[in-house]
Amino acid sequence: MKKLNLGCGKFKKEGYVNVDFLTDVDADIVHDLNKIPYPFPNDSFILIEADHVLEHLDSPFCVMKELYRVACNDASIVIKVPHFTRGFMHPEHKRGFDVTFGYYFNPSFKGGYQGIELILERVKLNWFAQPYLKKQHMSTIPFYGCLALSKCINFFANLNPFICSKIWCFWFGGFDEVEFQFIVKK
Image 1 (cartoon, rainbow, N blue to C red):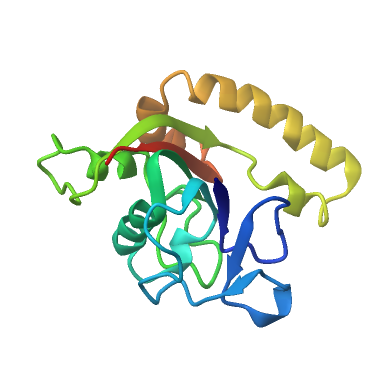
Image 2 (image 1 turned 90 degrees about the horizontal axis):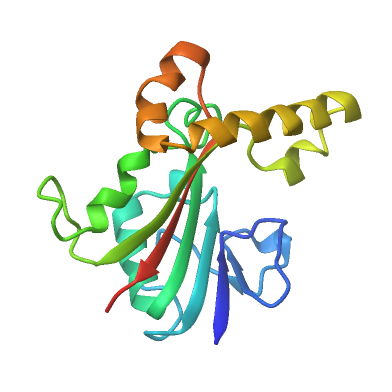
């Protein structure tokens, strides 16, 4: 079964179908991710990863419905997006996300169920996200210091990311990223 790296940018993954709208990143498939449907048949992928992509797109819920369409039953969808406390630090971000994003794919959520069932397997807050990118722009000692500090902060934050997202962020500052891992149920 195939794996999809959605919005790969310059970070292509071996063994994945790498998709991006930029023509200069040498993606396997060039496609504007705001244009649905995506150029894949139903039930094509066993693993879909989107690392800091949804915040750039016009309609995250439409994208999630499209990912559901191209995912096989029991496939994993891993979404990494900026936490709302840091979501607007990039000039092209259209939104930040909260730990509650996964609620919208649970049929029992009366506040906005989106019509596709995704089992939320994991929610994780990351204080120092995208180290592969930050390593290129930080000197060695601060980079490894932040990486070590992040492990400690992440440990305590992820004991209960829902409480942490509501309290910690306002007392001690925010998180770079919130990560969701879903299992597709068709």
